[in-house]
Image 1: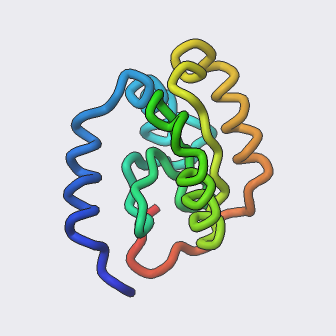
Image 2: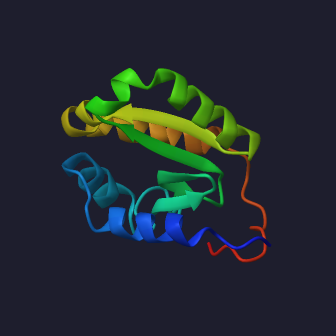
Length: 128
């Protein structure tokens, strides 16, 4: 299995300690198997990107888009296409959605989990 880029790993580690308010709010919902008994991790390296949140066993990536994402629709589309080619289903929320409608966000995540493939063995080197 190829080694993860050390620069990306360091950046992901730094991002975990510098959460936005929306990331912190969503993380409090997802962490510690609290959501549908599924393990989510935050700031996950899936080269060449860092995902905001992922349920690796279900191949679901959750991306939060702040104000800076409004001008990067082409980048986001390319990023989504790349992640989908790796088997991930990408769902996106704005920071405003998380802060103002966490129940709706939770409902959409639950729907994504309900329609995700059943968990299989993770690739060698990945933890559940």
